[in-house]
Image (cartoon, rainbow, N blue to C red; front, top):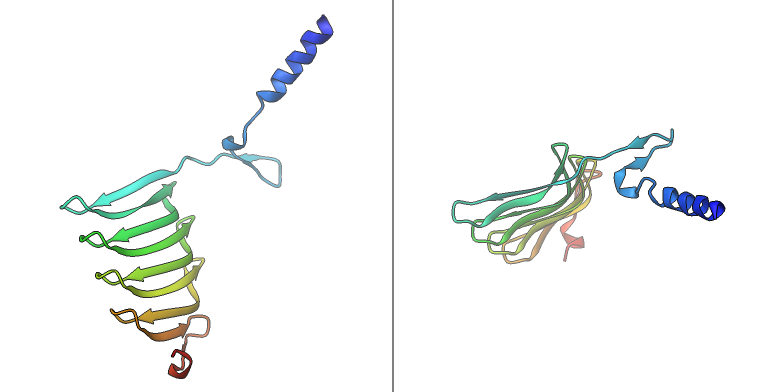
Amino acid sequence: MNKLIFALLGILLTACGSSENEGQKAADNTVKIESPAKDIVEYYDNGAVKIRGKERDGKRIGKWESFYSNGYKWSESDYKNGFREGPIVVFYKNGMMRYDGRYYNDERTGLWQFYDSTGILIKKLNMDSASFVPDSLIR
């Protein structure tokens, strides 16, 4: 009977150990506990959403979206530790794409494409070399 009680107690203590949500184990076996993310939403005077996303420790994280007062999306981009990281898309007030590109560590990188307000591609720019892509390669 005592062996059964100790076995059950051991299982119970093992099951009650730390969970993944408490933090991440670093290389030096210390546990880094992250503060919870906070939802951020700002509104126009007319009640429409102006901007929304998440912050942790005062730094933007994850997907952020901004909107025109008419409700159309203005932009969408991703953040990591307060820095733009990944794709970005920006729109005209009529909803058509204005440009798209990519950020790495808050720096523009790779191919960026620019459109007129009707959606026609007008320019490509390689941000890695800061050179325009010739028109002959656009159309």
